Length: 337
Ligand code: KG4
Ligand code: ZN
Image (cartoon, rainbow, N blue to C red; front, side, top):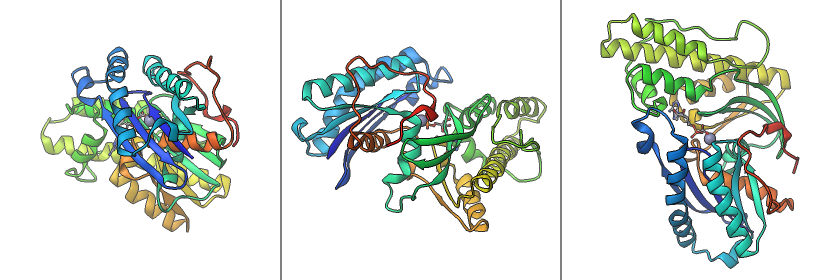
């Protein structure tokens, strides 16, 4: 079976063709980063318009690269939510229309299920059950995964997402948008021991996160510092160390609570090198294993949507013509496959 996957929930237009026997056949990505950089964040209206401009050429390119004609497709999957409503509407309208025209089923995919299943595209895919840490620009959550669609949210951020905290702190350090990867790069030049950031919500039980306090702490620290590049690097180091430490404490807790030995980390922040190194030593010490998507599939992409869509298509799921985009859509309301 073969499926077209479309991702347009935020500022990346991602298109992919996935075949259940041959794997990923093609994968196209257009990032709007430059478009939004001047504004220091995603401007929803500009995002929607740019998806409109890019989506059809990218679909044509993905189909050509995969040497696939519409009659060889068994379905069209697209991100139905959560995300920016205008951006979601572009992918849903195009995806739903193509499915109608090509007389194949349409499948609405939950963006976070896409992230969560992205490591399944790798040669060494995790077996279920596992605990998933999803850390992106819009979400931070710990999920107990028993099977596809069987998700129990163990904890989530009560304010900013991990990626959002990276981006906001990076902005305070004068770095461009999205600052997460740039802050991580700056932190490589930083020295340990100069600053100590708090580890929010680790001194009390539970698996929820809170990252907005870190951003305030960073703002005060940056305001009072000497402004040199080395000092900024030291602050970036201490900030990153605090986020990673916090994530490690919570992952350890979630693994102990569920008795699981497999941890999946996905979403944009899972591209962070320091996070990967420290999570690896955590899992070695716990005699467990950690799994990631490859770097190209950590941030938003069409491949993860095509993969998740394929699992639901195989289970016979199809989306009604009247189905709406869902800007808000709790992950634990999905149906089991
Ligand atoms: O998953 P994603 O592409 O978009 C959402 O669904 O939100 O994640 C983007 C987020 C941004 O906040 C970005 O700064 C962050 O992931 N990010 C990183 C790194 N690479 C991307 N944060 C820290 N270190 C990185 N290397
Ligand atoms: Zn995402």
